[in-house]
Image (cartoon, rainbow, N blue to C red; front, side, top):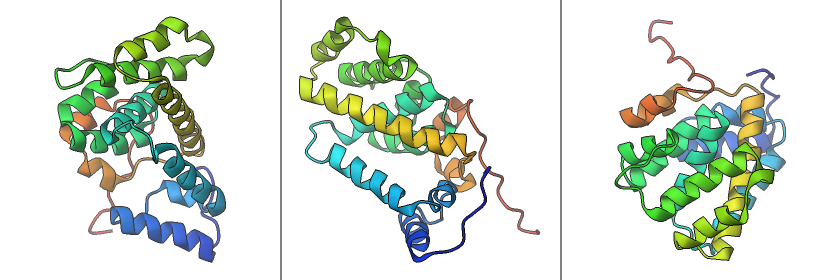
Length: 199
């Protein structure tokens, strides 16, 4: 990364441990967020608030993040959420979303949400009534449209911090994702290198 790892504090150690508990290793991005673990916790709380009570499914949330991250050119979140989407569908479906392609497994709602995410990332001032009508035609209600849009904006903010500060995807993450997902992520920062066993 482009910033140093901050000195250890109880709050920083808490987010390191939380990452290790969730993933089996401490993700690279936590070392940047350890400068402001309170803000990191705030992001986590907001994510929970956004998704709690929403009728958007886990799969649809994963579609939103994959489309948002890939449109941004964010390899880190594309790999992490490509893995999540593959678990909810398949590696081929996740790769299709990451590459902005359609696939037989993707529903009309999936495709509409992915298209909406890309438009919001590209230029939110160029969205139209017709774009929202397309979401409605795919079966989304207005509350879900608002929730999806808010979640896209949330993911843009989170990815921007990670990417701008040079957080590279973890080698462990890269080794865990389905091969179709790894092949689809041809953009952004490359994963860190697995340490040599003889180093």
